[in-house]
Length: 114
Length: 115
Image 1: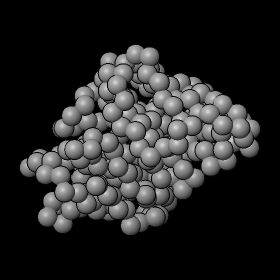
Image 2: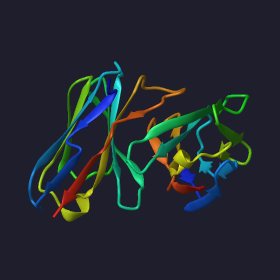
Image 3: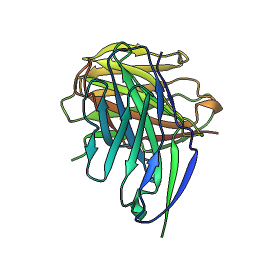
Image 4: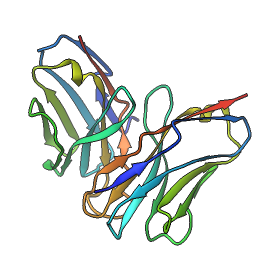
């Protein structure tokens, strides 16, 4: 079974600072995928970034990067130069080779202060 | 051009009623899902269909019955609604059923409130 743990219920960051959102995972699957989704106050789920377990390089998408440390089973999201619009809930999720369903963490509520 | 759409966006109903939520995707995806987000924001999969075939059926009360008339549609019918069914229900779709990047595109969600 897969499990995702996000240990930061809430984070407060000053605008323009970089922020790291923590995510650790547990799985016995040799192949899996890791995702980050953003959920603003309007409620929709927005895909941010994906990392495959066999990808050699850390994924990057604009201001988002994923700090993937396979041995430590962590997949932290790094947002550079944070903006007020980054205030939202952020969910880490994984999909395993066998289960083929997204398993979500508890989420981290990020607040960017001006 | 809405990729994954759900209707209605809000649903307020009395305990014991039966209600349906509709989902449509215009992405040409093979796989569709229903997720439930509870009051603590925790998201959990309920069902998954691949090419109209039920693939995943998590431990969900049988009052919940999904129906997929075609690949582009996955509806959720709920019988005898209970207070605990109050949540946001998300429909999602993905391109393929299998390994690899399988990004799921989510609909806007349906907020169900049972009084």
